Image (tube, rainbow, N blue to C red; front, side, top):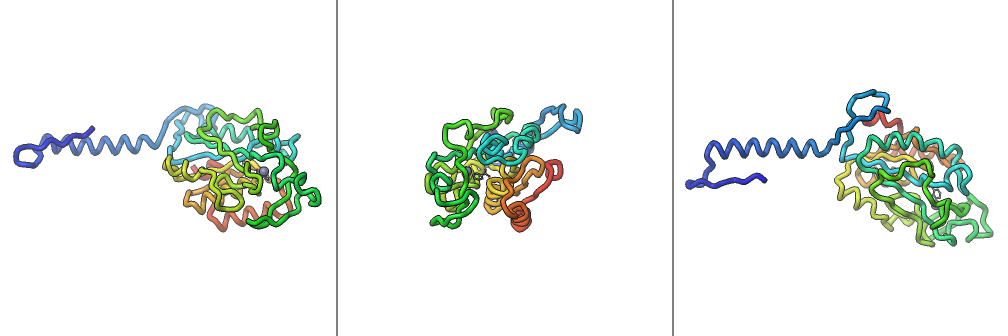
Length: 258
Ligand code: VGL
Ligand code: ZN
């Protein structure tokens, strides 16, 4: 603690003045250093060069769950292949947050709840058009679990979404009615996060919505291109790339951004 002692005439003597200046200098240095955590990462292609992890960055790993991987009920082609990249990238972040799609078995978006509808068609909901999905990521099932190869023990938070029967949720920030909050923005603000990096599945749905909400909320936002893959319905991938451009979301390899 910096203490300012008063001398009789109300001004500081030279010694106190000097220690105040030194104190201020060192406290701002400590503040600066607290944003950077240093450590070795021998697996990176930069060899033994020290890596830094900024406390203003977060990695959001979207829906890296069994049902979105080969063998699941709503599989992304080769979806499990991004896990190796994601695990490697995690070493560069101090803050990691996972999102988890988490639906009741009678969720309003499921084809089983809408037997007259085709999978991947749409229906009108009070909040707009909603895609009809095969049942997936049902609360408490194997399909809702994170893929076994994903490193999950580095994450500080898990954001669950889509657990209200009548609202689907693609974004990790707001559900599809665009007003129901998951709480994620509050967490990032409390942590003083400035830059958001997004990886996971699926590029054209949950990754896209998460990244665009993040950018609109004011975070500098980047989607890590080799750490995500799409479901690919119609021209959903081209639309996603266009929307990234429109909303100033970076789309490329992590090395291009840090
Ligand atoms: C997702 C469709 C339905 C996703 C989740 O994680 O991209 N897509 N629920
Ligand atoms: Zn879902």
